[in-house]
Image (tube, rainbow, N blue to C red; front, side, top):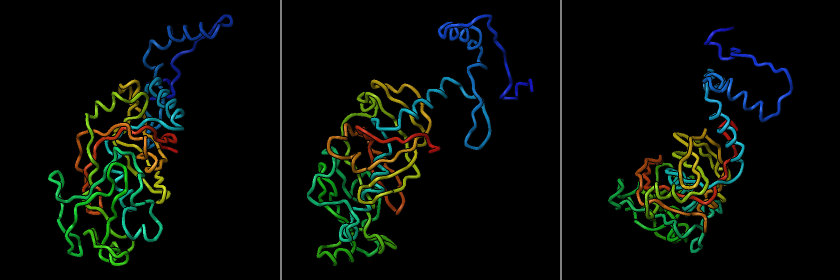
Length: 296
């Protein structure tokens, strides 16, 4: 048992002649044990089932934050815009609106004024084909303008049913769900991602979301996980890394009036499936509902 490879090895025993105050006990442990690296480590099980030595203080800090994030925090995300563009535009089509499966209400301010979403294959910053699978030219137009829902996507079938013209967004096999945007872009804001970080009092910097699944299409409640880097921000500074977190959040609420605190000026070009290319900036959101660690 007494070997370095054994992570449960007993490294030392401390006995006392009399009772100590809690303050004195902490001081003794700090002086006699914590000066050695092994006593600042803990055996931790990884995702593969293996065990490794982890820094005890960092592990406790991560676990403490997991407990603390059972509520809302500010969110700064490089890719949240991509996930919003994957889920929200599916309900911005005539078929979903006609069947009552969409939240979209044309002419209503459903989003923060900082949010504008445009479908535009002619944008020089994107790439794409100028017509859809039905051969209809794709028409550049706004879906959201300054927070107000102003447009819907149509293929020939939904356009005929609603007495309008196709916008050129039919997709192969799309009869079940209707038209989809192929070259969507969230309007850029001002300032860099670093400027957005500086404006966060206490929040989470997320590099990427994945395994996102829609729980309610009308309210756009989505659950998912973070990946590829998560950090805690305090008083405008990135202070330490965090473990991956699970969230359950309405994207409509996250992008709703008064909740978008900043939009970065630089946009990333991302492939998002369904033959779609999206232009997305980093977003600073006023609240985001993390429900705990990646395990639950």
